[in-house]
Image (tube, rainbow, N blue to C red):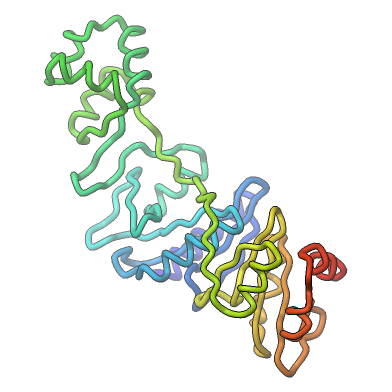
Length: 288
């Protein structure tokens, strides 16, 4: 089941002009890049099986490469509904049909919360649409089965309402009054959690960095627009270089005994000798 979903997603994204790379034994299964976005996608049969350390790492990496992390699954206990957005540990979770709609710029406005299926009303849009259609507050309240005071509240503030009321409102004023869920919305805050000597050195050079466990590199660092994927040790993943090429970022191996070929590489001592960030960046750019 999972592999079938991965195959369907991959074929669909290729047809949409994305460059994709499948990943195994990592916190995401697909990384996809187009001219306008990067997606980190975790595919699951059941979204409830995801662990928080996986979602945390997806979020952290996404913040460094301006990517959008997503979970795509067909169920979370029960089946995920079409055109409904769910969430697992803060990451948008969709079924395949909803994901396809989002890629085609048809964004949903229904989300699953603890209160059930809800929709957010945009107060200003509601007022504008009501006046445009010629309804008084009292007339609209009768059509929706709520008090006039509630309509005034909706118009003065953006409000979440249950799906049943949203359907009634949709039948009267359409979907323009609802807030479409911005599934492709990246986290701009960079997590900075490095504790190793190498991470601390990145910090000394003015970079922010995080250490990773569930991807083919050990550290990701960023300063301004410069992003470096860093592998530490002599067993570099074969996906390391191709991943950095796909993301259009630099890569670096800090080796112990065996220097890799055709990859920017340094001993730990050589790395620690850098005094300025531009010196390190210049060294990496020589391999472009």
